[in-house]
Length: 193
Image: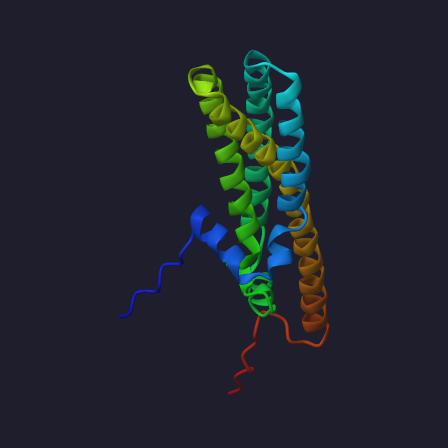
């Protein structure tokens, strides 16, 4: 008997799958605004703050990142736990490639948020011990990840809306099937005699 193939999942695989999107779709709007607002804003903040202030900001980011991670996991649990078999078949028939591609944005968000937490911890620990260029580049990366992670929550909301639309389509299909007498329960012909 053949074993079913284990699906390839993970944060890095989800980030690599972004390469299958058009470039504009992969970077818009989260990465673009992350660079413009996050890294750009951090670069401006570097000019008017000292290292101790930036370390305090990184501490505030840790709290935010924890909340973002909790929201992402709650949404992921919701999306994974609820689908019926019919819904999963409907999702598999979409042009986008089914459930795994549907869940990839959640893994990208988890990866970004974990990266944000690790970078904020690292910044708080090492900012005073590294040279100014390293401090400044790291703080700019932290700014990018903060904005990217926040905007990625909006991207996840987009995925949840798609989820809702597909669930509504599934409900219509189920209702039509039941009305036409082709419900999920098949009746055997009566035996006579």
